[in-house]
Length: 113
Length: 120
Image (cartoon, rainbow over all chains, first blue to last red; front, side, top):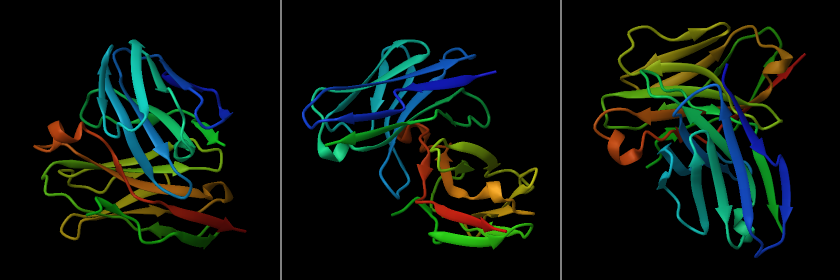
C-alpha cells in the first residue's frame, strides 16, 4: 500500500533563516506531487505541483521554491523565511486516472518567529 | 470568485444523528470532480468521498454520502449515525477536468471548511 511521509513534524525557525521540508512517497511510481500551505483557520493553498523528476510548476512564487530530485521525493525550500511563511504545510500525491484522488501526508507545522 | 463555498463555519450534532455539511461550487467547466476531506486535530487530511460531474448516482462510502445537485451546483456531505470520532474539520474541494485542466494543473480548490462537533 502507498504511504507518504513528511518531516519534520514541527519546526520553529527565526525570520531570515533557511527552510527545507521533505516529503517522500512509498508504494507507487511516478506520482504527481503537491505542496499545499494551510494558514490558521483557512483552507489549503496550492504552492507547487510536480509531474516528474525536475518538473516543478509554481502557483505562488513568493520566497519559496520546490525541487524533485527523485521520483518519490519532493522538497520545499526557502533561503530566507518570513513571518508570513508560518503555517501548516501538507504534501500530497496522486496518480493519473479517472478519479486521481490526492492523498495527503501528516503535515509539518512551521512557526516563524 | 470563490470556486468552493462552505457557508457553515461550525456545526453541532448529537451522537447517532445525521448531519449535512453544505458545499457549493462555481465552474464553467462541464467536467469536474468533487471531493470531501476530513481533517482531525492531528492535521492530516483524510479523503472521504468523490463525485464526478457525469456520475448519474450520488456517491456513497459507508456512513458518508454526497448529495449532488448539479443544477444548483451543490455537493453536500451527509454523515449518517454520527460518532464522537467524526468531530473534525471538513473540507469540500473541486478539480476541473475539462478544458480548464491545462491551465489549472489539475489542482484542487478547497473551501474554508466546516468544524463539526459531535456531542454525546
